[in-house]
Image (cartoon, rainbow, N blue to C red; front, side, top):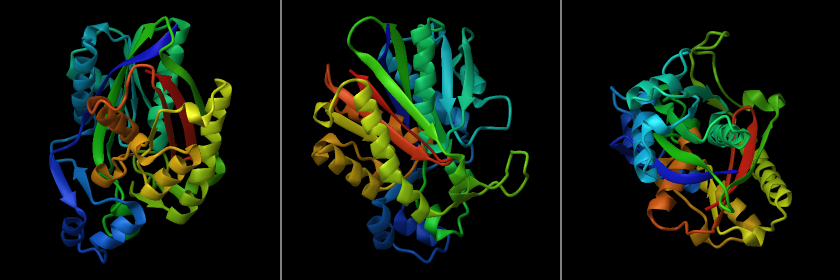
Length: 319
């Protein structure tokens, strides 16, 4: 029994802000050229006053359920990955349950920053494999615009808001999630973190990042997780049809594509239009590839991410 991905959905707030508009709005000493050169980002979507993590997540979930031909009543478990929940508690997942009209099953949040979706996918897959659930809704949703220090030009230009979701269903056969591989190393917690906020330490609740330090760890840790996933399934890099990476920085994405020997048309890139949407970035990119017909039956798709913690991981899925 495997967890087959049978539907995808994504939602981006309608407000689009270009690099130049961002610099003007927040009086930043930066430019479109400077941002594009260092990150590949040219625009991002920002949440409106009435948007919350739960409303973005619910809209992405509705689209994923429609794609899968599944109703909310058929979902046994809802796993929501986010670093920007509606509140400290209850879990934002239960608010999404209510918005979807889902009265069957249960839901909970996962906090693993930008790696959150891979963590959530792993948990949902384990529940399906164990027989605890037959249908799962896995969501990544973020409203990073609420935790960004808009005076810090090094970090504020990198992030955007959005949500993505997939529906998993228990199926026998070759397709489905082959394996997931999760890691963390708390010794590097301070190079990418949010100060206090809703946590026990108090503080302002704003994001702080040592960008060069994060970049230094990114490619080596991601490459290690990718090789671990391939080795666990007796596969090689040549077997991968499509790479769906976390959309943090075009330099990291390009480096991973080169390591896998994949041409650019087999690497999904949305960072230029979405910026870094943290836990939402992989399901948003996966949804785009799904809708564009870039994923065909039998394709081996590789997902990988790294985020605050540090956390990192990879997942292999056969479609």
